[in-house]
Image 1 (tube, helix red, strand yellow):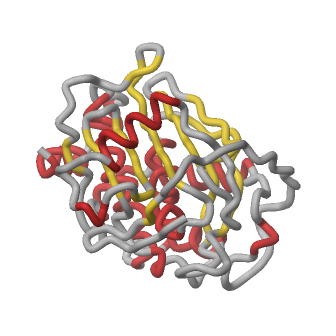
Image 2: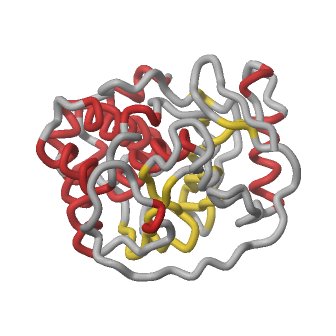
Amino acid sequence: MERKKLSKKQAYVVIGVVIAIVAVVAIYLNSSGGVGKADIKFDNVAVSGAYLSQMHDIASNMTLANNIGLGVTSGYPFPSGSNVSLTNNGLPVVLYIGADYCPFCAITRWGLVLALMRFGNFTELHYMTSSATDYEPNTATFTFYNSSYSSNLIDFQEVETLTNTYKPLQNMTNEQSLIFSKFNGNNTAVPANERDAIPFIDFGNSTIQIGAETSPTIINPYNWNQILAYLKSDPSSTVSQAIIGEANVFTAQICNINGGKPASVCNQKFVGTINRAVG
């Protein structure tokens, strides 16, 4: 695997065919515990219902979302140029492709989880840390591998290609691989040194995100509880400005592909502002 940082958005490059799905045995522990930098002993541990509930409360706080707006995000997803919508069973698809080792995926997942909670529910999610040997090691995040998400407004598809020790984890389907190649690896609208990068998010073939909007440096010093505390109580913190700013950008993309539902989210000021900027 070759990895490189991008000039505009930080990301990693995925090369080669990822084979096999690695079985992960999760141990269930309390969501509290541990202070300071994230502890790898929590890798693949299930996030408690209480923690998910607090995340959902943050996601649902539209006053907070409007006050932060873009926060410290560095840009927007870009239009795909496609005339063919990506749907599954009549629902628009949000396709995420990343890897557990990737620190830029780590920061991106925080915002994506909050955004997705505005349209549905996670009943299962697991803690994860980014690679211990890479840039911003052991960044606290989640993994979408073995997650459980339900929504009657969108279809969320996720692929975590490698573990945080660079072992094969999940394969893309043929359709997902074609999408990744078309809008990422073979996309001449993307600078050559930014292609084949993760994280990659396709919002219904309408807009595409390649790389991260914010840096993992922002959250790397903290564990999950400390990050949650910032989100709950300090909207002026860089942590909140980064994660909720990301969530708002992703939310606007989803509202743009699902008919603007729910109105309680999609009619918010920040959504219109962001979608007008993306064009």
